[in-house]
Image 1 (cartoon, rainbow, N blue to C red):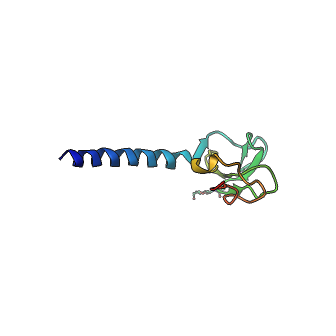
Image 2 (tube, rainbow, N blue to C red):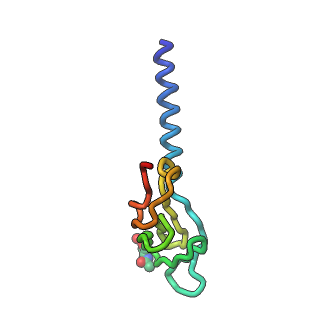
Image 3 (tube, helix red, strand yellow):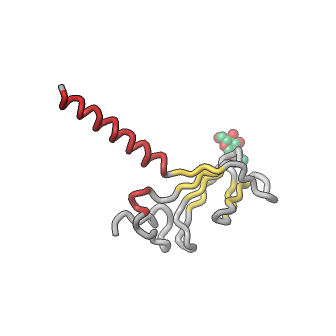
Length: 104
Ligand SMILES: *[C@@H]1O[C@H](CO)[C@@H](O)[C@H](O)[C@H]1NC(C)=O
């Protein structure tokens, strides 16, 4: 009985951890309409212009390791590296998501 209960707590705890890790991947930012171009988003943090419904992937030519998606309501979704790889410095010479180094 008591070992059953321990299992239950362990599983709930695990599920919470997994939900945290999964939700950590993407960042949403609203109202990112490009100031001059129609049907484009502008990510001022990374100085990127992205067409509506399109995703930018860093290609290893700049010191970036992320993807940015432009939704048709001008909300951008930024994906970086997962937490487990954040302890490593990304390999900026590689395109996203290969630049997310998972072992170091
Ligand atoms: C973007 O995708 C949505 C949903 O699929 C669509 O309704 C909209 O027309 C698209 N916008 C552009 C500019 O392609």
